[in-house]
Length: 261
View 1: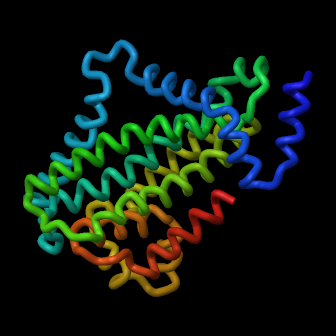
View 2 (view 1 turned 180 degrees about the horizontal axis):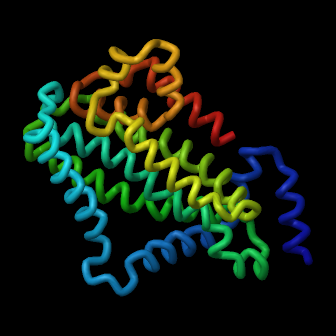
């Protein structure tokens, strides 16, 4: 009863301070949830975490064939790195959102029997997939060295861009996992939305082309998908030695913070 009373008082604390305090208090539980999710994902698989490398490489190969030979894209320098940077940024989002949508339902027995902050469950799914992100970023850096992309000091800003993406994903995780409890078809809505977003995100084309071809009101509507501005920010800092575009990256940051709050 004492534990329950303490947790109820924590619920009344102001966010985000209250949430971060609870996360620190239950940090060991969070670590165990993260490790459990990571182990379960690759249980009984021969290649294990190597699938984190194989999946983007296979997709990269297909897109390189399509946009180098079938429908050539001559505008992007270091095209394989250009493609891979967009794919990793988008794939991190798609890797997190479907499992996190059903995360509360999948852990219903734990939720009903144990007293703990419920936000630990979606957060653990996002952090578990962040391990895959780190693995894929190592792959991206290998491609940068392989294709002799000039290194600039702005590359140090790449982790900052992904921190903004984590913030956006956490906000979406809280919303989708909570809604899924009441509306069981949320997972299908999320999966359908991700299929549409694939074409409305500059993975295999440049954001500059979107800005050039879309009317300004539609362009700003397009930028409400923060993944678009984040992909452009990764490419600016990694490939072009430039700071993130203030307009697209600023909107991405604003949307991410708003969704998280």
